[in-house]
Structure formats: C-alpha cells, structure tokens
Length: 304
Image (cartoon, rainbow, N blue to C red; front, side, top):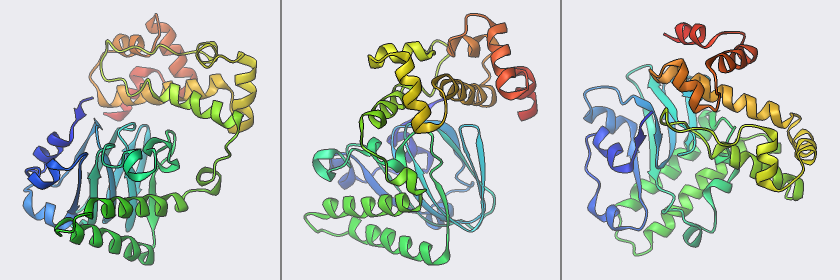
C-alpha cells in the first residue's frame, strides 16, 4: 500500500499545483468532476492508497467505494469525506460523473486558523463510514457551497483563505448532521475520553504499510498499561460505551486490516501474520478463521 502526497495527487490528475495556492500555509483546492474527466483520457480511479491529505466530494453518478473491508455501491448523489487515517478505493462505474471535490491538508485547517482539531471532529473519527447518500435538495444546497468556494478561490480578496476555511467547515458540519445522533453528539466525560484514547491508540497502528511494520499493542492488557488503567476498568468502560469488549474491538480491527492486506497486497501469509503481531502462521490462520469462517488463503482466493 503506497502513500500518496498532495504533490503526487496533482501528478495523477495531470495538473500543476497553482503557485498562489502553494504559497499559502497548508493547501486547499477545488475541482469539478466534469472538467477533470474532460481533461483526462481515462476515468480517474483512485487507488487503494493512504493519502496525506483530506478530501470532500459531492458526486452524482454510479460509483463503488471500498473502505477497509466494506464495499459501498453509490447511485445518485453522495457526500463523501476522506481522511488520511483511512485508505479507500474509488471506482467510477459510468462516464457521467458530476459534482465537485476539494482537497486540503491538515495545515490548512490548523487549530490556530480554524478553531478546530480535524481528527477530533466526529466526521473524521475512525470506525465510521463517511459516505452519505443525499437527496436532490441536499445536493443543491451543498453544490452552492462548492460553487462559492470555486468563485472565491479565483478572487483577489485579501482574506479569501479565511473565508474558504469557513466554507469547508460548513460542509463538514453539514455532513456531521447527516450522521446518527449518537455519533454527532458525543458525551464529554471521563469514560468517553478513555474510550476515545483507546480507539486513537488502536487506530494509530494502522494502516500496515510494510511487512516490516508490526503491531505493538494487541491485547487488552497492552492497552490498559498504556492508558494507565486496570484492564477490568477498561473492559467495563468499553462495554458501557460501545457494547463490546476490549478484546472484541481489537480483534475486529485486526481482522479488518488482515482483509485489506489479503486483498490489496501480494504479501505472503507469513508476512501478513508477522505484521499483525502473530508469532506463527498457524496462530494467525486460526484467528482469521474464527473471525471470518474462512482461512486466509480461501479469503484471498475469493477476492481474486
């Protein structure tokens, strides 16, 4: 799995980074799907890479999106949020793609400029599925924001980047309002903070990008020690907040990464087992089969 930088993204779409934008601290730009399709000879398939930038898309057309082990078929209009923490694969299914998307780095929406911490926002929390099928009325509302972005980007207004940040945050908040209420309005108490820190420690280990990269935290005890809480206390907090045990959450995430590696890499089973913290192939195979009812080899062959 490769890492795609903002510079490599521009190379993929055969476009130069605008000098004016490159001078701005951080990076931001807006694109039209129709204009991009007209410029490129082939459909802009986004490979299953980790990216160093954020992307928000308003798209109308038939598409398939793959997030981790989930496959989502999109018809009609959708609002899609992509974060550097979660690699995804985007496959257009027809030639008639309409809408807009913007790309930006975390420096563009740094806290001292925007007042928010991107990774603290519910829409970018790990474990979610930030793809929302939207109505025609919703599409028109969001489209107007993108059009204002596009217009402002070419203006000579002195504070245009401040205004653009506000437009990006407006779309982010629009998406967060589309999420379930329990996700959009998290409680702020000690147990929630511990849950959040646990998830952050877990997700910080992913994605696995090299056979030499190895998980360091694999058990409930590993996480409890890192968080300086008793393992029983951690289990109770996670059970209360998620309805799942610590071991179940960890196993589910490791299984999800195993599926990604089996599907998206040519690493052998031994390399995948090692990177996920298993000392023996047999231990990994037994774990994977218990979670999925399939052996690693059988799962990989089904995805070919």
